[in-house]
Every structure is written in C-alpha cells, then in structure tokens.
Image (cartoon, rainbow, N blue to C red):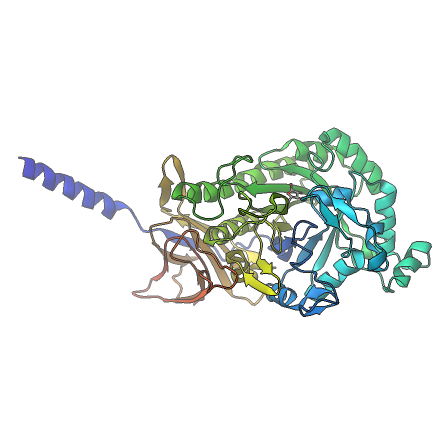
Length: 515
Ligand code: AHR
C-alpha cells in the first residue's frame, strides 16, 4: 500500500512539472512604442569624494595622462560607453555651489568646505569651463543643476547668461576672458535638487512658488534654451508630482526630477553590504528595484491627469544601489564595491525606463566614477571597469531605439523566504540600425532558464549578442586583479523551428534577433 502511495506521489510530481510550461518571450514588432531617449543612459557626476577629483580630474600638471586635466583613460572608457549626458555639479552639492567660485585662474579660486560630503576642502578646480570641456570631450549633453537652496534667482540667471549669452555684456566678456568665446550649450537646467531634503527641507507648495519666481528670470537665447527641470519627489512619493503638476502651469516647466535608490534592507541606518551578502539580500535588492516600475507608474498617472498631451517629462535623474560604505573609507565619500548584482540591478532599471519611455526621457545613474553604483573605480593611475559599466555597454543599442511591446508568458517565480519576484525580465526595441534587440535578466541566483522566442507570429532563426554572468552573486572587478565579470559572446540558433535562449542563473543577456 505504502509503495503504491509513493508511486502515486511520484506520478503526480512528474505530472505537475510536465504541466509547468517553459517561459516564452513574445515580441510584437508591428506596434512600435515611443523612442527610448538615449539620455535614459545619462550619468551623474557630483563634487563628492573622489568622484570628480582624482577619479576623473587630475589637473593638467598631473603625471597621469590627461587632456586639460581630465584623465585620458577614464574619458576614453566613458566614450566607449557612449555616455549621452552628464549631470553636474550635484546633488546636494548643487544647492551650496556658487558658480563664480569656479571660474577664472584655478590658483585664485576660493577653497570651500564640502559640508555635504565628508567636510573636505573643495578647491573649485573643476568649475563651469572644466565641466563643459569634459562633456565636449565625451560628446555628451550638459545637464547643469542650479542652486535654489543657498542661491537665488539672480545667481542662477547670471550663471545662465554667463554660459549661454551671445552678445556683449560684462558676463559674456568675462566668459571670453576666461577662454571661451562661443557660448556653452546647456541642454538641461534644474532649479534646485531634492528640495524636500538636502536642498532646503521645503514643502512642495513653497517650492512651487520659489520655482515660479526663479524660472521667470532664467532667460537664454532661444536656440540655447535648456529644458527646465523642477525638483520632485522620491521613491514611492507622489505628493511632489501632484503639487508640481498643478502648480507649475503657465511657466517654463519641462520635467520633474524624481530620485530613487535601492537599499538591500530598505533601511538607511543599515543598508546592507556591497559584497558577502546572503541570497536574501540579493533578492530583496532586485525585488526592490522592480518597485521602481510602480513608482513611475503612479507618478506618471498623476502627470497624465494634468498634462494629457504628455509634454512634461518624468526624469529619474538619480538612481542606483546604495550600500553600507566600504570599511575603512570616509563614509561621506559613498565608496562601495560593485558586483554582478549591480549589473542586474542596472538592467532591471533600464527595462522599467524603456517601458515608460513616453515620459521617462532622461535618467542618471548615481554616480559615474568611484561613488555609489559607479561605472569606473580608480586608484592613483589604475582603473577598473565595474559590472555596471558592462551592463551599460551591453544596452547601448537601446539608445534612441524604438521600444516594442514584449511579454513573458509562464514567467517562473523566484522566491527566497518571504520575498518573491518574477524570475525573468525582458525589454525589446528596434535599434537605429534596424535590428531587433532584446534585453533579458534572469534574477534567479540558482536556476538557469530557457525561453522560446516568438516575434509576431513567427519563430526567428538566430540570436547573437553578449552575456554577463559570473559564478558568485558578489563577483566583482577589483583593481589590480583579474576581472570576474566580463561580457561573453553569445549565440543561439533555432532548432526544430524554435529559437530558444538559455540564460544561466543570475545573468543579463542582450541579443539581436535574426530572421
Ligand atoms: O548621489 C548622492 C546624493 O543622493 C545626492 O547628492 C543627493 O541628491 C541624493 O540624496
């Protein structure tokens, strides 16, 4: 009897697994969605720790090879990444930054204390001219963040005149005297940063009045008019979006800046470690990232009520992982290691931003070098490209691509303890080169996955691209050591009329689909 019962249980188990269908990726190529603005792949460089000084700027006299002070190796790696946009000078730093401190002979510039980040001296060696030199070397657009917190409408308006003015004025002559004849091209200008917190601890209603007043005086030549960005909320908050959307009618207002960081534990006092973490923190981090979709959805739904023509952008201009600081580092420098987990986290953000490309026309990872979820880590003349760098590189074909509807049928659930999330995530787009690109994430730390691919009603013939994975959840690329996370060439051919993509556990895959 016992034997019969065991046989029955075994049969039921086989039957159940036979019933669990393989996941299927279904792309609809005939209903193109909005263009994925390349500035979704923007980057953030703040005067913070060694993010700018040492990490990127070494000064023209340095022995480290540089072009007018900017490290050649770093600029070259960032150019390979096709960085489309750089946001500067902060962050919290922006609301204490006075632009006049950063012009003229560098040895005469005032030294200030960086009160936000470690209380260290700020030499102002990098100022307006140096920043624009960087973006011009990168071929990127410039996003300048104005100072509303300790600044004024007058100070911001004079900065814009200094940067963009064409005719003769004391300020444009000063720019010329400082070595720049033609105006700088300012693509975006933000009025304050995180005005709910480090930018002034304001209520949104008060901010709305300050913004309205300031933006009235922010004038530039028409052809050099930046898009004006209002400081918005963060995470799941929607109150700032609500008040801004209602209160900023009738004044220049092109977008809201929203911020959201991913902390493994969700707690600022003990965020979780960047390396050596348990699987529970792998999944909590990635599941948290998936909530970004809900935050964007809720906020853009509010914008839709007030701006049905969808003229106002919802820019996610600070995102990324935020872990406990690297032991032994200055906690104000926000130094953290970067692992395979960060590569998946970046890819999941891209998928969300692509899905909301109609409103999310810009986002900036925090930050570019040596700070938080950096692309590059440096020490003296050494440099290492992080797993996040490689994730950005894989997704470059999505810059200015046209998004396509995509879904995963029978998506397996990934569960650890009480936390669960969809095991697979996908995005698809028609690239500027005409190819059909797919990005995939297998969040499961242990189980590989296989997906069949369907494009419209047909089964494609092949897929070629690059895969990012590693043996350990916290595999990293360390200075002076062989990198553990590097892209590998990937190829799959259809068999029996079906194209199947095999994804190892904990992996990111970007492929062009053929046939
Ligand atoms: O990226 C670090 C800081 O995080 C920024 O300065 C601030 O805007 C945010 O709180």
